[in-house]
Length: 201
Image 1: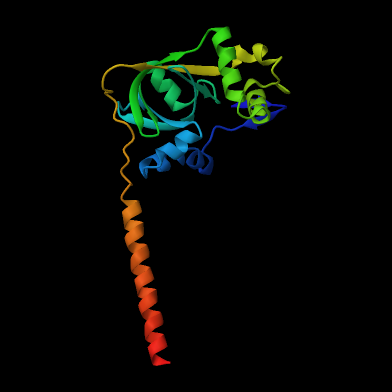
Image 2 (image 1 turned 135 degrees about the vertical axis):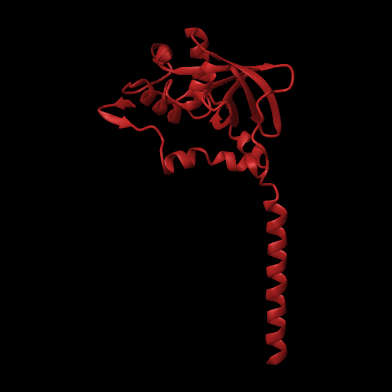
């Protein structure tokens, strides 16, 4: 765990973990583009013990062809440990899917550019978050260079060819037509019920 002013920042478990994985549901019901609009992609890694595809929703920033991720819990997350074992990953950004290779960012200049990329959308939010991750009292653009070595950053580079890791399937798309059928059926039943009551009056 990380600490700030003596307060622990717990690794997400239970409800917190479920909420963080909620974007996976958007991808599974075919709404990946909605999640991607908020810069949430799905990273598929190979489980280092099971060998099975492991899907993780994660916020990203892109610079050219390079995709950057920040690990809020350093080297602890399972997805991070998996890429240390096997750098080949699959990336899903909305409906777009492609293979990539993962690399740990160690260059301080590149790390600083990544931090600026992340904080550009909402500086106040990301300054507070980066302060907690780096165990600093506060962060601003002038102090960002001081924390580049305390932030775990991963660079994803697209690779040609078909990925060997199966992406997260959109296997819940059937929910939409099923919901439509249920809605039409309920509407017809209510309409018939009202008609019968009207005819009896």
